[in-house]
Image (tube, rainbow, N blue to C red; front, side):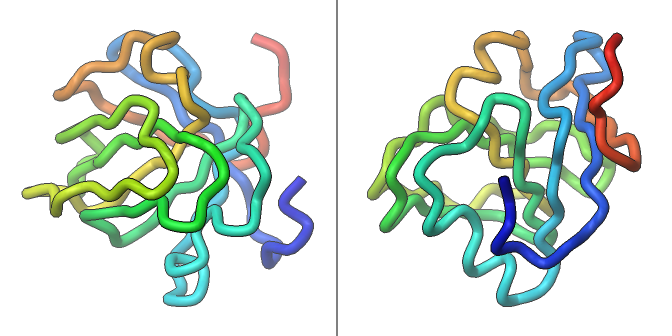
Length: 131
């Protein structure tokens, strides 16, 4: 579903404190181009996919077509701020202490019970295996 993106190894993201899966396929945007592009041009974000933008301490949804949830993480991948259902044409303030942001499908944060202070973990390779 990420055909226009350069190939990279997707990871799985989970909340260590709540023992819940946040996304089974997390793609990393580290280059300036990938970070700038973000999710632009997509019609939706599937429930099991996410984009991890590194480094990043603020985002916007200008020109986007759908809302997203966003987790701002510090260098230890601890949640320092959360945005539920950030609608198109909105932006966040700069988040103090944030080093990256995990952009998720809208509703994932409420569904998984994520809280500020929770620790996020990443596992290399696609998370397609059944639990």
